[in-house]
Length: 308
Image (cartoon, rainbow, N blue to C red; front, side):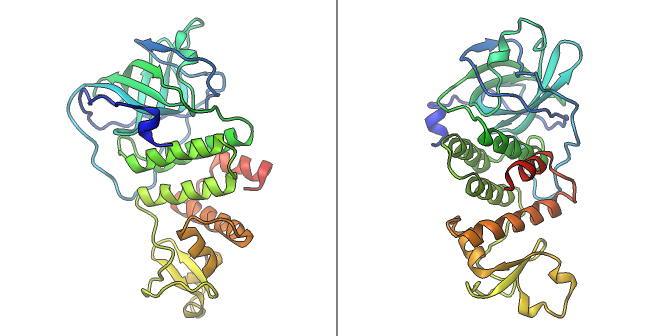
């Protein structure tokens, strides 16, 4: 499923944005109704909680569009929400053209707010907002539809993917390719594709689009990776042949990975059991390294419940 399949005939942007940073977190539930609302926004809010650290790893940063105060009907998803003042929420959204944003949903916590059935995680939305300060104001939200809701294990995986986006993507740093793959990931999860394969694929695209990923089929010495050999992936350099690093204990701090696994991952092929197991170990190591050892809450839940 492509972006144009969910958001056909996307309108032109009504303006552009200044950069700003605002915190946000707390997962929402799955959608229950179709509606369109102007003037304020909300999420399910039932499990909203305090916002954890929102600092993304420092790496490549794209330049966000600037100036202008109004944006109309942009494709986006709700990642997280948390309470703001007495009757409002701040929603952390991921949009295709503007990246991650913090939008104020005024009055969203009021008992009869109509937006509770609109702003839901894992469902495509058309979002409009105004402002150029640290937090914009949501002016309209329309549920686009066209996607199955996530449930069970797929829902847990969805929250894990959302947390990765919050942790790796800086505010107003557009990643259109990553947005499109996020949409594909939700579609695959909703259709019960193997979660391990879907998550490894998303993790690789996430690292590539945020400036971390390196080729898995070539070594740092510019040699082709050989299926029958063993390698270590250095987070700062790339693939290193184990035999060339045996005298350097520090260089061997990462997991030893079979060449076949690296080649399979480069092709996005997780049909081999060894590739499934070793890719999980490698990606866990890389994510932990790039996040400076900061734990992922949803990853731990997945490990405990599913051993992903």
